Image 1 (cartoon, rainbow, N blue to C red):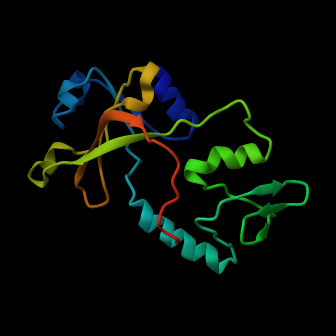
Image 2 (tube, rainbow, N blue to C red):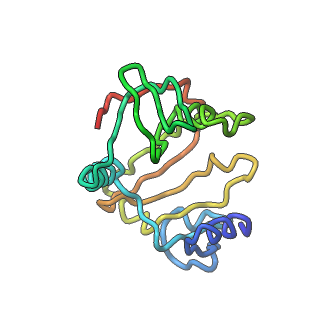
Image 3 (cartoon, one colour):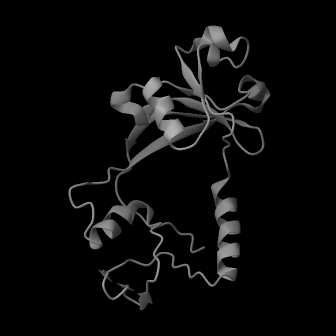
Length: 181
């Protein structure tokens, strides 16, 4: 638990260590934990809505967005990115390539010894009659050998409890989503 809290603190996020005895009453999950972290300032955001708003703001600042375009080359010295349809000038590149992010990084000559292994989790929505069981976001202490497989409970923007659980499994490949922004 100490390692996890140190990592969280290093990222400027407040979190407390919880034990079942110290937490008193609370969610059903809390009573079954050997320990957990509680980040009081965190929230689960609805990513599509947040990203749509961010895009509207950035477009006003003349930021260009390109979706679903396979990158075929990067010329770092010339500040140029090429795709089948056209070239982009790159004073700044924000790499949001998702499943292809590692390929873009390697085109810049970085991280040649690393491979991204994609995993897909399964999320379940709790029965709305039981929403009161989850009062906060809780992150139980995972086995550090498999830290990505932790079971945790969160609440989304509407207060509906969500439970993210294993089994995590390899995602099976790279795909470009249908959304074009």
